[in-house]
Image (cartoon, rainbow, N blue to C red; front, side, top):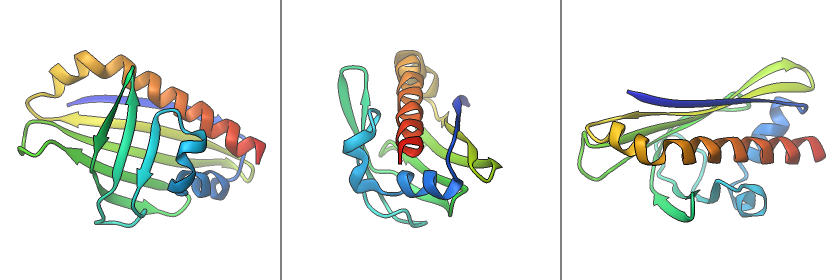
Length: 143
């Protein structure tokens, strides 16, 4: 398994961060990494995600695995052929105080192509996570 994980402290409530993270319609206004997200944050639903990685945009249709209000949102994306490549993407919100949270954003990659794909896009993906985290922080602290 290959994994990426990023963290950032946000000076806002867990509820505020959650409301921004699950308001998919507004992603194009602020999110430099997930430039478009369609669907509903409900377990066992399929989303349509457009991710900007480097100079291009990739489209994924992950299945929602976890929705825990103000705490966790996770999905699993995969290639059509089972076992080649899976990405378990997660967003976790941990309260530090009533007005501050730690936002943890990561992904675990598995499958036969995980190492090869990570060697090609791992750094760009990490940079995308960091850019999204900073944009989320700015939006939550400004609101």
